[in-house]
Length: 263
Image 1 (cartoon, rainbow, N blue to C red):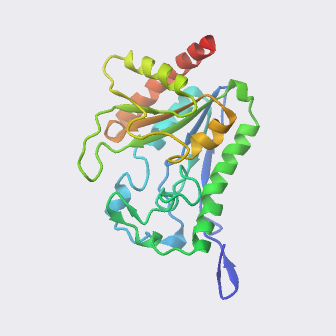
Image 2 (image 1 turned 60 degrees about the horizontal axis):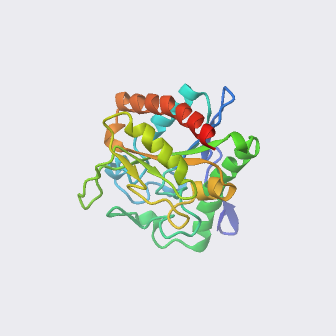
Image 3 (image 1 turned 90 degrees about the horizontal axis):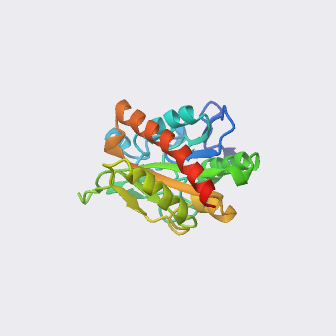
């Protein structure tokens, strides 16, 4: 809440979307999917954050293609999926509150004027209304499960090149911190596909300093976890989105059976 003339003002109007969207499981599944950067909605009160329309189509606003991959994958597996609805430019839900890139004043070269000069109250309002609400729902959903039969899967996509133009060669990256075993096992299955360039903690390194969702929900519980990053040009259309969802829907159950056999 912020205040104007002594009256509290909510960040979200009564008809605006909740911070998360739940796709409920339809079968008893070990897979628990989350998608931190699926959406690019902005609260009406924040307008366009001072960015031109063209910037909202870039990777700085959301993880291009991953919402559709996640939804196809959820339908194929019948498992739970928790999606973040609001843009990472409003607040990045894969960063801890107060992290320097949580509410970025500049993102990949683009000044985000609506994020500059925020007061502590304005920052806290975004944290409470969006960040914490999203993660509280993930916690609530985890509390309903048997955690010894849960694989925590965080879905992301990455841009083929940042503003500096440096190309990223990986088709898919597997990020890991507390659970490198799962990443190694899944990497082997992906490489057995025969034509994929698979990144090991690429294009990002997963750790508690850089990221939030996997360390907070899975790391502190020592849950098996995969953070999956797919290159955005491979999932920018319906064909690619379905192809990758079908691939993951085929490999994740195989991965889970192999992992259980090796524990």
